[in-house]
Length: 88
Image (cartoon, rainbow, N blue to C red; front, side, top):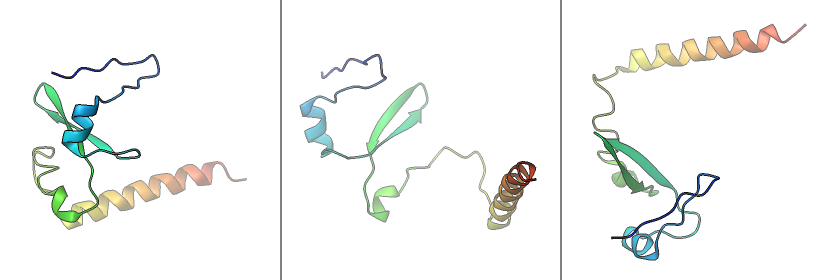
């Protein structure tokens, strides 16, 4: 089993065997996915098919496009209100 030590800056060196098995290279991005009481380390790939199942289980119920639009509009309005407060 491969192990790593967390530094005081919150960094780890991923063992070579793990990097090789995951196909990682310098600059690779990783996603830490909560899986019940542990985390999965998933390399982020640039292809759309690699995203399949990535978000499964993260949302308790489906979100409609209308709900997404409302959330975006609300966040945009909140950001503009914050910006307007700082203007004379």
